[in-house]
Amino acid sequence: MFVKISNSLLELVYPRLCSACCDRLREHENILCLNCIVNLPQTHFHLDEENPMYQRLAGRINIQSAFALYYFSALGKVQELLHNLKYRDQPQIGVYLGELLGKRLSESEKFSNIDLIVPVPLFKDKEYKRGYNQSMMFAKGIANVLNVPVANDVLLRVKHTETQTRKSIWERWQNVETVFTLGDTRKLSDKHILLVDDVMTTGATLEACAEKLLELGNVQLSIATIAWAER
Image 1 (cartoon, rainbow, N blue to C red):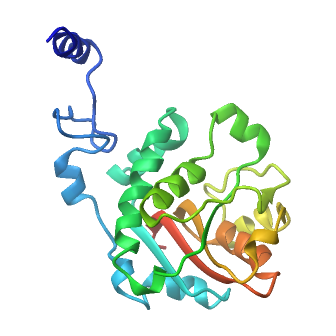
Image 2 (cartoon, rainbow, N blue to C red; image 1 turned 30 degrees about the vertical axis):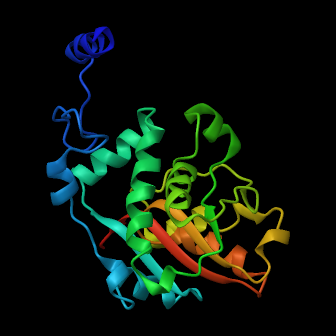
């Protein structure tokens, strides 16, 4: 009883808020309110093998499948969700969204044979300042559902890059063209890899990472993100 009263008083001072709409969460809700769970713009790309995200990437890199959980729009709730994940010290959002996405992937045969999850890496200094890599948190959530390992030592970011915001497609590609390298690749042999990131806009970062992983020649590659931005 004392714990329940203490928690209620704490809620008055520090209310738990939905990470997308900022409404107060009810007792049974976590991270997202029920309204946002139902109404955030889901893509359902996992049900469409030839979805727009796959089509955009498949013409440039050899991938098996591609999926994003939500559509991204400027100043929308998904943008607020990602902003909280990346800049407001809320790594639990990434794990939660990874678990949501993992459940969707488990419904698709295209993702049924994933062997390993690889997050898009952050530069070490940036990860140190933020305290975590948001894509790693996302990967952990997916792994919780699919029960496959996460490898954060096979793909490395060796250069710091400027923000991709407001850059053209060509500028985005130049910005990431030489920043990734391979680390310990022994665990990648003959594996179906799921490369994951927070959001795909032009796909330049994902393409640069994918090209490095595909250099091995004996891997299959699929891609998943929290959000997908139409252009």
